[in-house]
Image (cartoon, rainbow, N blue to C red):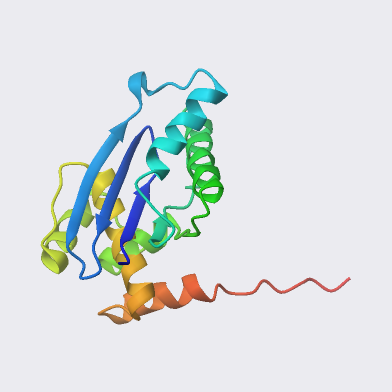
Length: 176
């Protein structure tokens, strides 16, 4: 039985698991104690804890890095994101990495929507609501995973997101 798993990595990681029919089976936020990882072992354990919500039969989407972010927490975000990716890889689980803009566009039609402006479209389209924007993002990621597997998306903008994820644009080499 295929499941669809969305992971929004952070010190408050959102996880949503959908069954093959798109029903929510799990929705949670795993909070890193004190928001601090003081060792490589803690980082690795956190990544494994999150990766354990997926298995090799699942279609998994983990949100890509927000490369425009600034501040002290950015290095922690990258560490967490890579720890989860390494844990998934070590478990033999393949994953898809939509960008934050693709997640927003899939939910709202605009890749530059604010987190607050995603609440209503997610509720209207799927009837899903949660207090945590990390869990809401994970829900959209799980919906992206499901759309990739079953084909499509309901709207033109969702189809564009899926198409871009499956066949990213090729960068042209500069001539010497």
